[in-house]
Length: 446
Image (cartoon, rainbow, N blue to C red; front, top):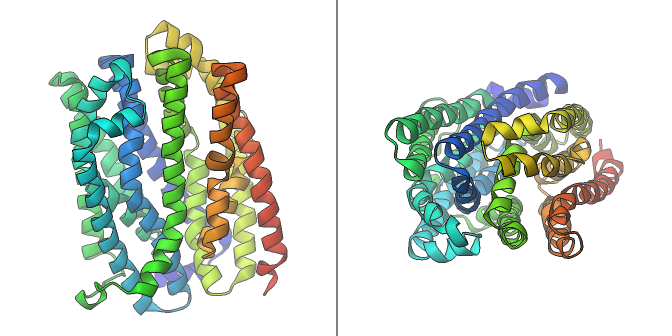
């Protein structure tokens, strides 16, 4: 086993968390800035309707490519525990399985998208005038989804090796390429929404090139051809852990469908555009909190596999503490600067008028979300798929979707926005109960 992965059992937890979380946060920041600038360019150079088209298309392609993320996170839970237990052979076989599964599943989804593209777009909310720009953006992006899936899978494996700087670099490559190509294809060549799609697709290909280079020349995982044979037991172990992430992305996609249709019914294309800006801010603003959660995963998984339960408890407490502090800072920024933030995206006066209030409501409970994010991540790192699945789905699946379906009937479009903080509070309470019980029982073994 390489020295870098052994450090997960030896180095100070605070130092490890900083080492893992800062590159993860920077990587997520660049990815989020990429999405953010993409939206700004599209909104200012093409029009606010194009933002609505992005709000429809991106969740579809992200759902497909999230198979790679699911296999990356779920398989890396298996991989981290194998490294922690000193089982190099299982680590190699796990990585080989991740490669095979990502290729097969992503390719199958792309074929489905090519045959049923119009139906999928309509299901995700491409109604009225949104359909035409949505189709122009969808199909170029769809062809690049396998590359994006491999990037998402590989990124998580790299972090499991404790080489998070390379994971960060892969996201930076993608983000910088997309911004430069956006300027070229949208502004210089005046290719409109098609140019935005080509720029984004090209950035996925370049990210894949970096990931491939890492595994060929820098990785400690060197599977042989003999490892590329499906093992039923190992496949099921990876799938059971991957299903947690995939189910979450599936529920997020279902939520997007419900939100887009509900918002369109309440306020037409305008309401979908408002949420398009808010959804981008949700991806962007919480990047340091998500970075700590991702940095926490390999530390908890490795030490749980090595039965170092004291270190697992310490990593949970420290992750919640730092992520919670950052979430409070983010909340204050959103609360005070909502209108200037929205004005960056668009010059449409109606959108600028209606979005700040909605944005504040959506972020209202963000100071407490660290408990929910870290708690759900712990159960995945520890290889407990049922609890991880239930807690991961708690916000969007058990609370937010029902609230979005019910509250607008009584409160109109305001019911959509207030559903977010209510779901955050409820899911945090449930996760806190599960996590406290776990720390008093299973993590008291040492």
